[in-house]
Length: 336
Image 1 (cartoon, rainbow, N blue to C red):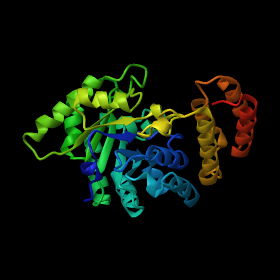
Image 2: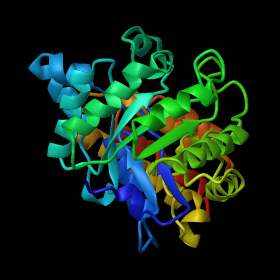
Image 3: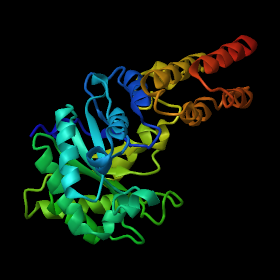
Image 4: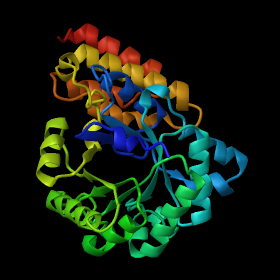
């Protein structure tokens, strides 16, 4: 098995899978600007979560749309395909597809609180059925014997059950477990409890003393930037950290380029236009341009006149309109 996780220099970072955010277009922009200055890739990219049930059961038109969510570029490597399902057979087939498509890894979503997904017994609901959860890991390994299988999960459903839940997952020996340091009930309403990530590391280390378990523990939750992530990794003993919301309006998040970390307004807006054009090119025929507006809000903040520009951009319905609005605003304001 080609386990890229073992080759990552530590500490390493990962981009969280965010529905209708980390799509093929945004990931390409992130890869372009975050990999600058990185001789060795220190961060892992994830697709948005994709329904394994849909890949197996949807009519051909629906399946083709799901396959677009699995579109990636070589610059994104290492790239992991994330799936959700409560049916081991479907997970096995989805994992086999990921291997066929050339992904570097497979991840099983066991933390998403979306009610539609939970009704299927998938996502966060799997924390209430540990036996099924381990069966899904085994099925993914069976479907993709050449890929490492990881799991993204939480501390528990209604309460923190890390002491029981994590050993159950570790027993199935996934390559990595990403621990979002909140319960499903807490959503993102309370601060992430990174001391529980530290406890997860201790549970894993204790298991290693009696078995050959080499599962990596990756912490997730409330990370502002790489410096914050590095500090949390140091404090918890985790092998790496996954960042999510910090990527909004900040596709150069993982870059060590001084130029990008101190980016000017004009350059930032140019990247925003580039992102919008790529979205239309790759996804415009299957996704509404309105998805880009959450990105506009994130890109356009923290500088004089940002609010007015945001209001103008919210009325646009295409990349061409957005570019026209931005060029007009730049001509009027001449920012640095």
